[in-house]
Length: 325
Image 1 (cartoon, one colour):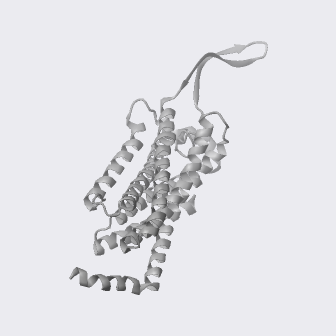
Image 2: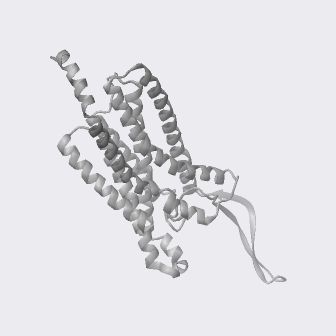
Image 3: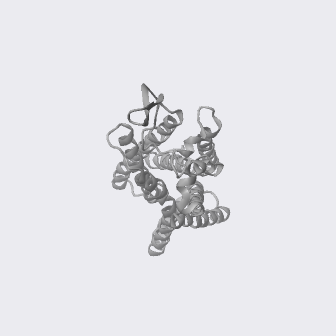
């Protein structure tokens, strides 16, 4: 947890700083804006990881004596809020990036584009929506604080069915034990339904749409590569390949979690508690640590390509110069 958390904090902080400097110096890139906000979302996951790791050290081996106190604490709620805000904003920003790539590739000569103002509006709406979704369990009366206390790591992934059974406790004299006698009525808690709707509903739909959009994009890229050899189309293809690498890693982290949740909620299998913890502290946040290094890898590959083929762009510009004149 310390390695993943500190890696996410340091890596994404560097990405945000570098992208902010590039934006001030070179101006107007919508993709740069999207990547900066994605790095901010991943940075929040690092904050969550370091918080949980610190609490683990604080309680130590005696945690089992303080588990109920920790789950009901304000710090647990805050950590769960940060984790949910980070994960949801990541998914929505990936959807926004996918829409931008879909428009640019499917309609390369169209006028509909994400410009700086529309990009800011889209990013602002994403943060407002995800902030509301993350804060809702704390402010709506239907949900108790237990939404963020469903597990020791304060994130309510729908990996187990949580059912309340009503009944009465009676004392059996012959057996000298207390017995719980259910009256047959069961009730599923509202906050658990919220978790199912959020993770297995909204996130699943968004990820399926992202997958379908990129499938259409790559089919379009193959066809465009045969028909058109313009520099603009090639540039959009290269940008799409870069974004596909980033989106693909996040997709691979989220889909196993959603598949496990679906299998658990449909009763196909019963997941062990240890798998829940591993999914929250390793599977979901690992992409937050990997993303900044993927950005660096993509940037290095782009610079290397520019150094290897410096004359290509020059020759294109030279040919087009008389026409522009």
